[in-house]
Image 1: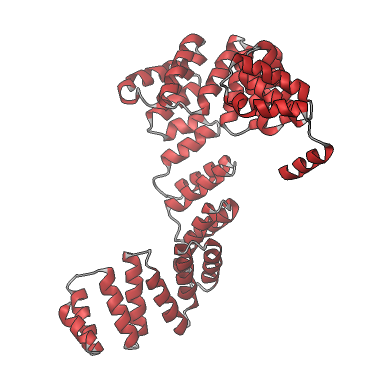
Image 2 (image 1 turned 90 degrees about the horizontal axis):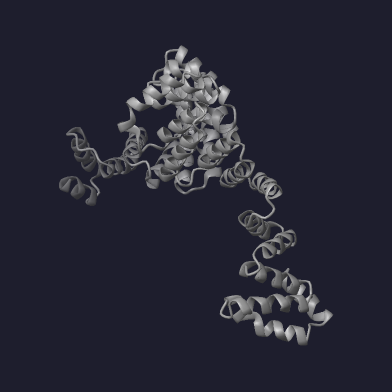
Amino acid sequence: MTLAEQYEQQEQYEQAYEEYKKMLDSGKKSSQLFQKLGHLATILDKKDEAEEYYKSMVSLDPNNIVAYEQLMDICFENNDKFMYYLSRGQKHVLEQQFDFAMNDFKKAIAHGENDDKTAHTRYLLANLYEQAGKYNQAIDEYLKISDTDEATSETYLKLANLYDKTGFTESAVEILQRAKDNGFEGLDEPLAKYYSKTNNPQKALELTHDDLLKARSLMELDRNEEAIELLESVHDKYKKNPTYCTLIAQYYYQTGELDTAMEKVDEFAKYAPNSPLIYQMRALIYEKKGDELNEHLNWAKYNSLKGDSDVAMNEYMIAHQIDEKNIDVVKIIAETLDKTDKNRSIEFYEKLLDLDPKNKRALQKLAEFNESIGNYVIMMDYMDRLKEIDPRYPYVMENYDRASQLLVNPPSIIDKILKFFEKI
């Protein structure tokens, strides 16, 4: 390396180039060495060799922007449009300019001469589409790869995952089964899971070697005793596994031992406390028990965790109709509506105050609402009640004197208009 660098400093580039090549021939491969060779090959007008060195550099250091820039220059001069756009696309990926990268990869594909070249680029493009949430475009790219000899098991697994993400799990089953029939390996377990998801437990059972998926499939085939025998045999291995706990709960649910099923759901909750499945399973158990209130409360919690707030609110409203005096339900409805429909939330804060006359949150919200509509007498009544309950309550300490002044000197119409415009 010292001799080569000396030649390079003395601008004896041919000799430096030969010394660096000797190092490469001796097996000393590194990103730095490939960069040196690429640089000198460019100086010596050995463009094809320079291109190969920079490609080798990229294979060792895929995040090296300099290598892509050098490749772009060389490929532009050599009129290799495929490699030019591919290198520019990879450079844009590193710079997180993903839209530009997508366009470059599409241009590279257009200039690709064979499937071997374009398949790799389609993988890069499909991955970008997937990261951007453009699942249909990603699917299109993987389908194009699947029609070539460059397709691998990974191609079909990517396709299946995207079909599942977009709600077409049946298509995931179809594409993996076709790949399996065509001799691609390593697809049995993923295919079994998709069969289970599409309500085909028999197929799942035939394919899987996973004990837990076997047990699930057996229960779905009403072979409950075989399922529990299998689950008990693997208890020590899976006893702290959340899926194992849910399967045990499912067994007791299906066999009608509902109290035991509930105990197993509670056990599952210890290992996965934020899982929506906790509330789904509880809801099903309460439904079977005929406990409508707790059934709807748990469906509400389930949908809330799933992000479906409208369905969750509907379930809370049904629970409220079943038991209008349930303070916890009224409180949840009031607090939830306070974030989405403040005027409607007041109805439930009033109900909450009827059920719990010393509820500080309800008193504060009712005071705030009446101030907003100019009912200062009523506002002050709520403030006085709140102060009597807790004189050091932060809202009272910060607003009581101001509220008293509003009662004595209410703002003029002009002041209200100005305050309104300040808010917007």
